[in-house]
Length: 383
Image 1 (cartoon, rainbow, N blue to C red):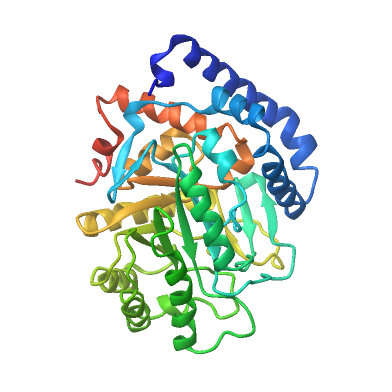
Image 2: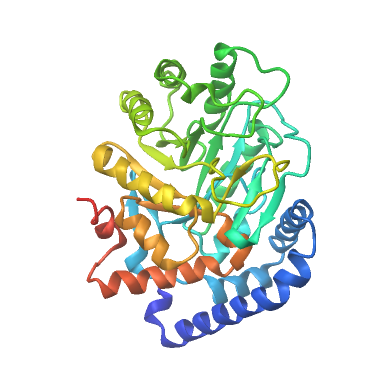
Protein backbone atom coordinates (compact mmCIF):
# COMPACT_ATOMS: atom_id res chain seq x y z
CA UNK A 1 0.00 0.00 0.00
CA UNK A 2 0.99 3.63 -0.43
CA UNK A 3 1.32 5.42 2.89
CA UNK A 4 0.25 9.02 3.35
CA UNK A 5 3.65 9.78 4.90
CA UNK A 6 5.34 8.68 1.63
CA UNK A 7 3.33 11.03 -0.61
CA UNK A 8 4.22 14.72 -0.33
CA UNK A 9 0.92 15.97 -1.72
CA UNK A 10 -1.33 13.52 0.12
CA UNK A 11 0.52 14.25 3.34
CA UNK A 12 0.14 18.00 2.79
CA UNK A 13 -3.59 17.65 2.07
CA UNK A 14 -4.09 15.39 5.08
CA UNK A 15 -2.33 17.81 7.41
CA UNK A 16 -4.10 20.89 6.04
CA UNK A 17 -7.57 19.35 6.19
CA UNK A 18 -6.93 18.02 9.69
CA UNK A 19 -5.99 21.50 10.85
CA UNK A 20 -9.09 22.86 9.12
CA UNK A 21 -11.31 20.25 10.79
CA UNK A 22 -9.75 21.06 14.17
CA UNK A 23 -10.50 24.76 13.76
CA UNK A 24 -13.99 24.15 12.38
CA UNK A 25 -14.99 21.70 15.09
CA UNK A 26 -13.76 23.94 17.90
CA UNK A 27 -15.27 27.20 16.64
CA UNK A 28 -18.27 26.17 14.54
CA UNK A 29 -19.45 22.58 14.87
CA UNK A 30 -19.05 22.01 18.61
CA UNK A 31 -20.69 25.23 19.86
CA UNK A 32 -23.43 25.41 17.21
CA UNK A 33 -24.29 21.80 16.39
CA UNK A 34 -23.13 19.63 19.30
CA UNK A 35 -22.84 21.44 22.62
CA UNK A 36 -26.00 23.44 22.01
CA UNK A 37 -27.91 20.16 22.48
CA UNK A 38 -28.18 18.10 25.62
CA UNK A 39 -25.50 15.37 25.56
CA UNK A 40 -28.04 12.54 25.26
CA UNK A 41 -29.54 14.23 22.19
CA UNK A 42 -26.11 14.94 20.71
CA UNK A 43 -25.20 11.27 21.12
CA UNK A 44 -28.33 10.16 19.26
CA UNK A 45 -27.67 12.67 16.48
CA UNK A 46 -24.11 11.40 16.09
CA UNK A 47 -25.37 7.83 15.67
CA UNK A 48 -27.92 8.96 13.10
CA UNK A 49 -25.20 10.89 11.24
CA UNK A 50 -23.11 7.71 11.04
CA UNK A 51 -26.12 5.82 9.68
CA UNK A 52 -26.49 8.35 6.86
CA UNK A 53 -22.81 8.78 5.98
CA UNK A 54 -22.08 5.05 5.70
CA UNK A 55 -24.39 4.91 2.65
CA UNK A 56 -22.69 7.81 0.85
CA UNK A 57 -19.50 6.58 -0.89
CA UNK A 58 -18.37 10.07 -2.01
CA UNK A 59 -18.37 11.29 1.60
CA UNK A 60 -16.51 8.19 2.75
CA UNK A 61 -13.91 8.73 0.02
CA UNK A 62 -13.50 12.34 1.13
CA UNK A 63 -13.19 11.21 4.75
CA UNK A 64 -10.44 8.74 3.85
CA UNK A 65 -8.56 11.26 1.75
CA UNK A 66 -8.70 14.03 4.31
CA UNK A 67 -8.45 12.19 7.64
CA UNK A 68 -6.89 8.74 7.26
CA UNK A 69 -3.21 9.33 8.04
CA UNK A 70 -1.22 6.14 7.38
CA UNK A 71 2.36 5.51 8.42
CA UNK A 72 4.30 2.22 8.69
CA UNK A 73 5.82 3.28 12.02
CA UNK A 74 2.35 2.94 13.58
CA UNK A 75 1.68 -0.60 12.37
CA UNK A 76 1.81 -3.22 15.08
CA UNK A 77 0.97 -6.82 15.84
CA UNK A 78 -0.68 -7.38 19.21
CA UNK A 79 -1.89 -10.78 20.44
CA UNK A 80 -1.36 -12.11 16.91
CA UNK A 81 -3.56 -9.44 15.33
CA UNK A 82 -2.29 -6.93 12.78
CA UNK A 83 -3.27 -3.32 13.48
CA UNK A 84 -2.71 -0.43 11.10
CA UNK A 85 -2.19 1.72 14.20
CA UNK A 86 -2.64 1.27 17.97
CA UNK A 87 -5.59 3.66 18.39
CA UNK A 88 -9.12 2.44 19.03
CA UNK A 89 -12.51 3.61 20.16
CA UNK A 90 -13.27 2.32 23.62
CA UNK A 91 -16.49 0.50 24.50
CA UNK A 92 -19.27 2.73 25.74
CA UNK A 93 -19.95 4.99 22.77
CA UNK A 94 -20.95 2.67 19.92
CA UNK A 95 -23.13 0.37 21.99
CA UNK A 96 -25.05 -1.21 19.11
CA UNK A 97 -22.33 -1.23 16.45
CA UNK A 98 -23.60 1.70 14.38
CA UNK A 99 -20.29 3.48 13.71
CA UNK A 100 -17.71 1.06 12.21
CA UNK A 101 -17.91 2.25 8.60
CA UNK A 102 -17.29 5.87 9.55
CA UNK A 103 -14.51 5.00 12.01
CA UNK A 104 -12.85 2.65 9.53
CA UNK A 105 -12.69 5.33 6.87
CA UNK A 106 -11.44 7.88 9.39
CA UNK A 107 -8.46 5.64 10.09
CA UNK A 108 -9.08 4.00 13.47
CA UNK A 109 -6.93 0.95 14.10
CA UNK A 110 -9.77 -0.81 15.89
CA UNK A 111 -13.08 -0.30 17.63
CA UNK A 112 -14.62 -1.96 20.67
CA UNK A 113 -18.40 -2.10 20.29
CA UNK A 114 -20.75 -2.49 23.24
CA UNK A 115 -20.67 -3.29 26.02
CA UNK A 116 -23.45 -5.65 25.04
CA UNK A 117 -25.42 -8.09 27.16
CA UNK A 118 -27.23 -11.40 26.71
CA UNK A 119 -30.64 -9.73 26.90
CA UNK A 120 -31.66 -6.38 25.42
CA UNK A 121 -31.16 -3.77 28.12
CA UNK A 122 -32.87 -0.36 28.36
CA UNK A 123 -30.19 1.04 30.62
CA UNK A 124 -30.64 3.51 33.44
CA UNK A 125 -33.18 6.35 33.44
CA UNK A 126 -31.99 9.32 31.45
CA UNK A 127 -30.08 11.59 31.42
CA UNK A 128 -27.19 9.25 30.67
CA UNK A 129 -24.55 11.94 30.20
CA UNK A 130 -23.51 15.22 31.78
CA UNK A 131 -20.76 17.38 30.31
CA UNK A 132 -17.90 18.66 32.43
CA UNK A 133 -15.88 20.68 29.89
CA UNK A 134 -13.75 22.28 32.60
CA UNK A 135 -12.36 18.80 33.28
CA UNK A 136 -12.44 17.43 29.71
CA UNK A 137 -14.86 14.88 31.10
CA UNK A 138 -18.30 13.35 30.78
CA UNK A 139 -20.33 12.00 33.68
CA UNK A 140 -21.58 8.65 32.33
CA UNK A 141 -24.57 6.77 33.76
CA UNK A 142 -25.86 4.69 30.85
CA UNK A 143 -26.16 1.34 32.57
CA UNK A 144 -25.29 -0.87 29.59
CA UNK A 145 -28.17 0.10 27.32
CA UNK A 146 -28.03 -2.03 24.16
CA UNK A 147 -30.16 -4.13 21.82
CA UNK A 148 -28.76 -7.47 22.98
CA UNK A 149 -25.60 -9.39 22.16
CA UNK A 150 -27.27 -11.60 19.54
CA UNK A 151 -27.89 -8.56 17.33
CA UNK A 152 -24.81 -6.53 18.29
CA UNK A 153 -22.40 -9.40 17.67
CA UNK A 154 -24.00 -10.15 14.29
CA UNK A 155 -23.44 -6.51 13.33
CA UNK A 156 -19.88 -6.62 14.65
CA UNK A 157 -19.10 -9.73 12.62
CA UNK A 158 -20.40 -8.10 9.45
CA UNK A 159 -18.43 -4.92 10.17
CA UNK A 160 -15.25 -6.90 10.79
CA UNK A 161 -15.51 -8.93 7.58
CA UNK A 162 -16.25 -5.84 5.49
CA UNK A 163 -13.78 -3.40 7.07
CA UNK A 164 -11.04 -1.86 4.94
CA UNK A 165 -8.40 -2.07 7.67
CA UNK A 166 -10.00 -1.63 11.09
CA UNK A 167 -10.17 -4.50 13.56
CA UNK A 168 -13.36 -5.05 15.58
CA UNK A 169 -13.62 -6.09 19.21
CA UNK A 170 -16.85 -6.71 21.09
CA UNK A 171 -17.24 -5.99 24.78
CA UNK A 172 -19.61 -8.25 26.71
CA UNK A 173 -21.10 -7.50 30.11
CA UNK A 174 -23.83 -8.70 32.46
CA UNK A 175 -27.36 -7.55 31.68
CA UNK A 176 -28.50 -4.69 33.91
CA UNK A 177 -32.18 -5.45 34.48
CA UNK A 178 -34.67 -6.82 37.00
CA UNK A 179 -33.91 -10.41 36.01
CA UNK A 180 -30.43 -10.28 37.58
CA UNK A 181 -29.99 -12.92 40.24
CA UNK A 182 -27.08 -14.57 42.03
CA UNK A 183 -23.53 -15.10 40.79
CA UNK A 184 -24.51 -18.24 38.89
CA UNK A 185 -27.10 -16.27 36.93
CA UNK A 186 -24.51 -13.60 36.18
CA UNK A 187 -21.98 -16.19 35.02
CA UNK A 188 -24.46 -17.73 32.61
CA UNK A 189 -25.30 -14.24 31.31
CA UNK A 190 -21.66 -13.72 30.35
CA UNK A 191 -21.40 -17.23 28.93
CA UNK A 192 -24.36 -16.70 26.61
CA UNK A 193 -22.70 -13.66 25.06
CA UNK A 194 -19.30 -15.34 24.90
CA UNK A 195 -20.77 -18.29 23.02
CA UNK A 196 -22.31 -15.84 20.56
CA UNK A 197 -19.02 -13.95 20.14
CA UNK A 198 -16.71 -16.94 19.69
CA UNK A 199 -14.79 -16.59 16.42
CA UNK A 200 -16.87 -13.69 15.11
CA UNK A 201 -14.65 -10.70 15.92
CA UNK A 202 -10.93 -9.98 16.13
CA UNK A 203 -11.05 -9.71 19.92
CA UNK A 204 -13.54 -10.03 22.76
CA UNK A 205 -13.50 -7.91 25.90
CA UNK A 206 -15.11 -9.09 29.15
CA UNK A 207 -16.33 -6.05 31.07
CA UNK A 208 -16.43 -6.88 34.79
CA UNK A 209 -16.22 -3.27 35.94
CA UNK A 210 -19.27 -1.30 34.81
CA UNK A 211 -19.94 1.08 37.73
CA UNK A 212 -23.46 2.04 36.61
CA UNK A 213 -25.50 -1.10 37.26
CA UNK A 214 -27.87 -1.89 40.09
CA UNK A 215 -26.02 -5.12 40.96
CA UNK A 216 -22.66 -3.35 41.17
CA UNK A 217 -19.42 -5.15 40.30
CA UNK A 218 -19.71 -8.55 42.03
CA UNK A 219 -17.03 -10.24 39.94
CA UNK A 220 -14.30 -7.88 41.12
CA UNK A 221 -15.50 -7.99 44.72
CA UNK A 222 -13.42 -11.09 45.44
CA UNK A 223 -10.86 -13.30 43.69
CA UNK A 224 -13.17 -16.26 44.22
CA UNK A 225 -16.02 -14.67 42.27
CA UNK A 226 -13.72 -13.72 39.41
CA UNK A 227 -12.27 -17.23 39.33
CA UNK A 228 -15.75 -18.75 39.11
CA UNK A 229 -16.62 -16.54 36.15
CA UNK A 230 -13.49 -17.29 34.14
CA UNK A 231 -13.55 -20.97 34.98
CA UNK A 232 -16.90 -21.04 33.18
CA UNK A 233 -15.72 -18.84 30.31
CA UNK A 234 -12.64 -21.04 29.81
CA UNK A 235 -14.94 -23.87 28.78
CA UNK A 236 -16.11 -21.89 25.75
CA UNK A 237 -13.79 -22.40 22.80
CA UNK A 238 -12.90 -19.18 21.02
CA UNK A 239 -10.07 -18.45 18.60
CA UNK A 240 -9.80 -14.75 19.28
CA UNK A 241 -7.86 -13.25 22.21
CA UNK A 242 -9.74 -12.14 25.31
CA UNK A 243 -9.21 -8.92 27.23
CA UNK A 244 -10.74 -8.06 30.60
CA UNK A 245 -11.93 -4.53 31.31
CA UNK A 246 -10.93 -3.74 34.87
CA UNK A 247 -11.94 -1.03 37.34
CA UNK A 248 -9.76 2.01 38.01
CA UNK A 249 -10.35 2.51 41.73
CA UNK A 250 -9.04 -0.38 43.80
CA UNK A 251 -6.16 -0.73 46.27
CA UNK A 252 -3.19 -2.44 44.64
CA UNK A 253 -3.25 -5.42 47.00
CA UNK A 254 -6.83 -6.22 45.94
CA UNK A 255 -6.03 -5.51 42.31
CA UNK A 256 -3.09 -7.88 42.35
CA UNK A 257 -5.23 -10.69 43.75
CA UNK A 258 -7.64 -10.26 40.83
CA UNK A 259 -4.85 -10.19 38.25
CA UNK A 260 -3.31 -13.30 39.78
CA UNK A 261 -6.64 -15.04 39.17
CA UNK A 262 -6.85 -13.86 35.56
CA UNK A 263 -3.29 -15.02 34.94
CA UNK A 264 -4.49 -18.59 35.49
CA UNK A 265 -7.20 -18.35 32.83
CA UNK A 266 -7.67 -17.92 29.08
CA UNK A 267 -7.05 -14.18 29.18
CA UNK A 268 -4.49 -12.47 26.96
CA UNK A 269 -4.99 -8.80 27.73
CA UNK A 270 -6.34 -6.15 30.10
CA UNK A 271 -8.29 -2.98 29.28
CA UNK A 272 -7.16 -0.44 31.88
CA UNK A 273 -9.33 1.00 33.05
CA UNK A 274 -13.00 1.82 33.42
CA UNK A 275 -14.53 5.10 34.58
CA UNK A 276 -13.17 7.20 37.45
CA UNK A 277 -15.37 7.03 40.56
CA UNK A 278 -13.31 9.35 42.76
CA UNK A 279 -14.66 12.92 42.65
CA UNK A 280 -12.14 14.34 45.12
CA UNK A 281 -11.27 17.93 44.26
CA UNK A 282 -13.90 18.17 41.52
CA UNK A 283 -16.94 20.44 41.67
CA UNK A 284 -19.75 18.18 40.49
CA UNK A 285 -23.46 18.38 41.43
CA UNK A 286 -24.22 15.70 44.00
CA UNK A 287 -27.30 14.49 42.15
CA UNK A 288 -25.31 13.64 39.02
CA UNK A 289 -24.90 9.88 39.04
CA UNK A 290 -22.25 7.86 37.24
CA UNK A 291 -18.54 7.60 36.60
CA UNK A 292 -16.17 10.14 35.09
CA UNK A 293 -14.53 9.75 31.70
CA UNK A 294 -11.67 11.68 30.16
CA UNK A 295 -9.46 14.08 32.08
CA UNK A 296 -10.07 12.80 35.64
CA UNK A 297 -8.83 9.36 34.49
CA UNK A 298 -5.51 10.43 32.95
CA UNK A 299 -3.13 10.32 35.91
CA UNK A 300 -4.67 7.31 37.65
CA UNK A 301 -4.93 5.29 34.43
CA UNK A 302 -1.34 5.97 33.49
CA UNK A 303 -0.12 4.99 36.96
CA UNK A 304 -2.15 1.79 36.84
CA UNK A 305 -0.79 0.85 33.41
CA UNK A 306 2.77 1.38 34.66
CA UNK A 307 2.20 -0.75 37.74
CA UNK A 308 0.50 -3.58 35.88
CA UNK A 309 3.11 -3.61 33.14
CA UNK A 310 5.88 -3.69 35.72
CA UNK A 311 4.30 -6.67 37.49
CA UNK A 312 2.58 -8.51 34.62
CA UNK A 313 4.13 -7.23 31.40
CA UNK A 314 5.25 -10.72 30.43
CA UNK A 315 1.76 -12.13 30.96
CA UNK A 316 -0.80 -9.59 29.77
CA UNK A 317 -1.06 -7.20 26.85
CA UNK A 318 -2.39 -3.84 28.05
CA UNK A 319 -4.92 -1.63 26.27
CA UNK A 320 -4.71 1.78 27.92
CA UNK A 321 -7.94 3.75 28.36
CA UNK A 322 -8.75 7.08 29.96
CA UNK A 323 -7.86 10.70 29.37
CA UNK A 324 -6.00 10.56 26.06
CA UNK A 325 -6.29 13.98 24.41
CA UNK A 326 -2.83 14.64 22.99
CA UNK A 327 -0.16 12.65 21.16
CA UNK A 328 2.11 13.21 24.16
CA UNK A 329 -0.43 11.57 26.48
CA UNK A 330 -0.81 8.62 24.12
CA UNK A 331 2.97 8.29 23.88
CA UNK A 332 3.28 8.35 27.66
CA UNK A 333 0.67 5.61 27.97
CA UNK A 334 2.57 3.48 25.44
CA UNK A 335 5.92 4.09 27.10
CA UNK A 336 4.25 3.08 30.38
CA UNK A 337 3.27 -0.30 28.98
CA UNK A 338 0.17 0.00 26.78
CA UNK A 339 0.36 -1.78 23.42
CA UNK A 340 -3.01 -0.34 22.39
CA UNK A 341 -4.64 2.99 23.28
CA UNK A 342 -8.38 3.68 23.42
CA UNK A 343 -10.37 6.87 23.86
CA UNK A 344 -13.88 8.37 23.68
CA UNK A 345 -14.00 11.77 25.40
CA UNK A 346 -11.24 13.10 23.18
CA UNK A 347 -13.48 12.47 20.18
CA UNK A 348 -16.36 14.36 21.79
CA UNK A 349 -14.36 17.37 22.95
CA UNK A 350 -11.85 17.67 20.11
CA UNK A 351 -13.72 16.32 17.07
CA UNK A 352 -13.56 13.46 14.54
CA UNK A 353 -10.16 14.54 13.24
CA UNK A 354 -8.66 13.71 16.63
CA UNK A 355 -7.72 10.23 15.42
CA UNK A 356 -5.50 11.87 12.79
CA UNK A 357 -4.00 14.32 15.28
CA UNK A 358 -3.08 11.46 17.59
CA UNK A 359 -1.62 9.24 14.85
CA UNK A 360 0.43 11.95 13.17
CA UNK A 361 1.69 13.30 16.49
CA UNK A 362 2.62 9.86 17.80
CA UNK A 363 4.53 9.04 14.62
CA UNK A 364 6.54 12.25 15.00
CA UNK A 365 7.36 11.48 18.63
CA UNK A 366 8.46 7.94 17.78
CA UNK A 367 10.79 9.17 15.04
CA UNK A 368 12.15 11.92 17.28
CA UNK A 369 13.20 9.30 19.82
CA UNK A 370 14.65 6.88 17.27
CA UNK A 371 12.03 4.12 17.32
CA UNK A 372 11.38 2.17 14.14
CA UNK A 373 7.96 0.84 15.19
CA UNK A 374 5.45 1.78 17.86
CA UNK A 375 5.86 -1.64 19.49
CA UNK A 376 9.50 -0.78 20.27
CA UNK A 377 8.31 1.99 22.62
CA UNK A 378 5.93 -0.15 24.70
CA UNK A 379 6.99 -0.08 28.35
CA UNK A 380 10.39 1.59 27.83
CA UNK A 381 9.88 3.84 30.85
CA UNK A 382 9.35 0.93 33.24
CA UNK A 383 11.64 -1.77 31.89
